[in-house]
Image: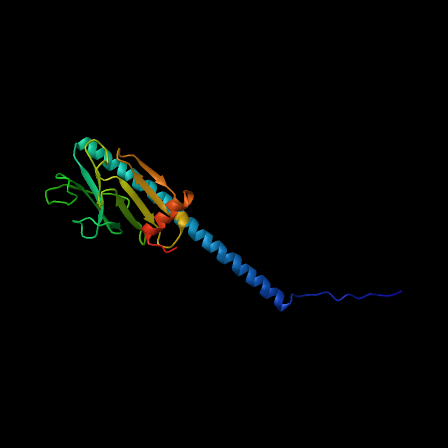
Length: 192
């Protein structure tokens, strides 16, 4: 009768621990990157929807007042600028010039532009503002608003297309054609 004694391994080898640690690190870094992208996507979705609601309210105000209203971003609160990173400037544009005169009424607008995000307005007439007429259309300033996240994240890119009739629709360039995605990347200043 032979007695076989097996030596059991009570611990793991150092190289096994290092491999397990490396794999854990890779999985954690991938999940953190995914979570950050998911969070930016949710912020973009939420903020874009709120902006469209605010524009719809401004459009209704223009129709009720029977006046033209303009909206743009402005660092100093008096002049419009093309890249929307600062505060909003919303005013009744009595002379339809896109420049706020002292006599023109100012309206507050929410939501604020999220910190580190920026928006770029491209109208088909190369104006820095969006105008809602008394009829509720945007015939003088239709265009595209591109919402750029603070880091390169194509999944978080959003665009709001404003038609001449004043209708707005939200587009996700990452789910559109490669040409649309590249155009949005170019607007945001992201290198390919």
